[in-house]
Image 1 (cartoon, rainbow, N blue to C red):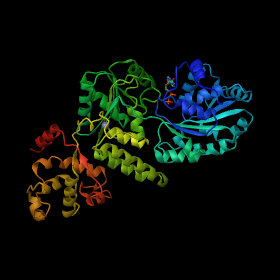
Image 2 (cartoon, rainbow, N blue to C red):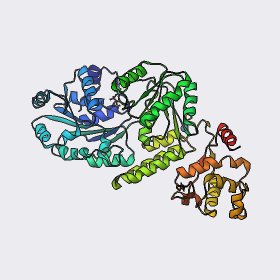
Image 3 (cartoon, rainbow, N blue to C red):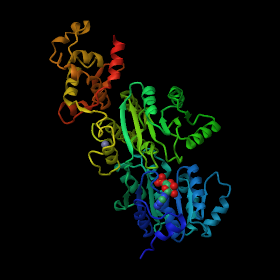
Image 4 (cartoon, helix red, strand yellow):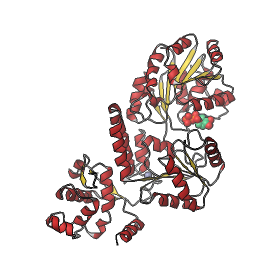
Length: 512
Ligand code: ADP
Ligand code: ZN
């Protein structure tokens, strides 16, 4: 019989009960079963090794990639009376820590993967009494993950030399493929996988094409009270965005790694204390920040992956109150992301392409956004969450598969060399000198789109670029990409969101 962990949870940590899958994970660990726990940020992963570390005889070795977070965790563990230490290059007390480990005086020992994989560390561990290996941020072991660290590959040989010591791997971010890889790379059986609920029901997801990003972001800020984060891709971009949002009348600050450290710390502290501040930041902002009442998170451009998007939007509404996540994207974001994939090492390309594909599914769907997110994390989800733009009908997505085929036909029949505007003119039968000269008015695709459908042509063009059904050459001319085939063969559908009227009017005015 295993001891019941609940009394220790209450006595040492002061929590009345376990949350989510914590008990399940803790019981496996106490029973010596190797486990991979996939739990979202904030779900309480640390507890799943800290509690066994207190209960089990011997030391729990925690491998963690971020020295700064390690020291935060050390302080938190010591605060509840756990005997813990870190062994990193910045620690002055390394000799003392080694002797505490040998003397059986440590419940927890935090180390970085570079150190854990070294020979001298293995020798040190062989002189100690070990209870558990806990591998934090375990996705770093996989090339499929978004944060591969080669040193993680050396952890399995280390752990294999202590075959009786149990293993617990932890991560917040892993799709099915990455998970399978983590299990293999760390020697954990497939039935050792435990996945906890990823749904954040109080966050409402919105995904919108970019028209004028600063204006779109300002609109959201004007109608959303409370503190919020606007993620911008570049350092310079955060400052520009902050300047342009000043017109909203809200206190606005920028945050990025290039700022003077004193200013950065002040901006962060002021944001944490504020009830209405907007912070324009690079994605570095938010790690380790505990602010439960963030009411909105805006992405002013495409995030790196679905995992990154989930993690970044997850900083909204930790208090459980209604919050919103807005993502603005442009077809050019995808074009740039594809170019970047071509530049990474060949062995990482497939993983990067799959990541981008998942992201485009989230952006493109006319169905429930939450369903796409949760499915990505391997969870079943209802077809309709009632709390995203598509479920609320806010986006008004419509099926445009037939129109997409007409669009592709027009691109094909005109020789795969003309831009979006010309294709629109052909499909709507607008004679120009050029169309006359090219003899395109005799084509079967001439004037086959009526005025109502015409309003959907721009979004369809965008969606086709996004799906890699069309590619733009350096002159803006459109040609077929690998995604065209499925649409033409009727194996794929496409839905789009009609352009907001304001955008149409603005474009019309510009053309006049
Ligand atoms: P993660 O590493 O999964 O992001 P943490 O381990 O940092 O999450 O825990 C997040 C917060 O939840 C911490 O403040 C922690 O003290 C708290 N917490 C963990 N387990 C419980 C529990 N069973 N009941 C209440 N609070 C908990
Ligand atoms: Zn939904």
